[in-house]
Length: 377
Image (cartoon, helix red, strand yellow):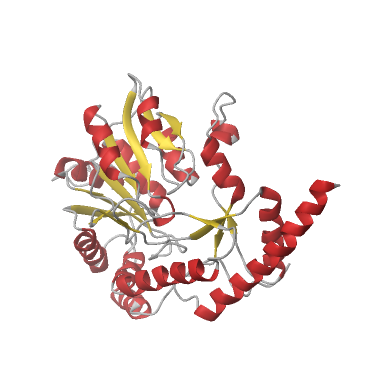
């Protein structure tokens, strides 16, 4: 096993994280009650400019709560991109609904609005859009489709804290949205998530569901089946400290993306393109290579010198539990087969990015020659 010198991601803990955690320990409020939960929620609400937010155990729980709060159930269809993390789709299955997969755009890598229209049936109840790798979906087109067809719109913003569409933070366009604070996210609570909405009725339903279905004004009386999806005060303390430095983190991440693009400008590497009026948070800086063989050769060589990468998500319509042999989503499949995520954490230094890019350029030249020789044999 080669020692990792430059990891794909790691938390950027430069503020009051330790101080706030120690305050939790001193207060003994370390579980799901405590002042840091409300402070974190309020600051997050102010940051994305939404009326109601509530913390959750993690991003997957946040998605599950959202689908439950909207009343989605068995027999319903939910349109979702195939090119996403598995949690987006598993949450649909948790409530008994059926995921209907759509292809991605080759430019932004986001779900294709035209394909959404094609996949709507009499059973369609919702669209679950995912702002993949920090680039927002085309929310003008998607919100229009949702309204015209009387569909719920759910935004999965797990990878898009600090991403804007038409100068509005993602997560405020739909009926409900979710965020993730896992250790490799733009800000972290270790494990954690958030549900956001401008609808008070939906918000109240989420609160009840995440707290074991507890009825109001009657102690220990539960009148629906609920879940224990609450965040701890310690996690919220870390989240509050992270959120205090969100603009510093986002600036660093955008600078990292700019450096990668600069150093790789004169190569055949393809980048995720920014389109429409967006501000990309660049959760992961991702690239595409000419073919899958070159991609795998480069990944192997990078790990040999201690540089960690990760493949772009596998299309979920190709996974065993969701496989549909009659479904082809050519762009999603291409992006997955050719793409990798490069190291992207906020503390990455310019000389490290340059080192990675120099190695990439050298490997590309060698791999292309090797591939050409093999093809001609």
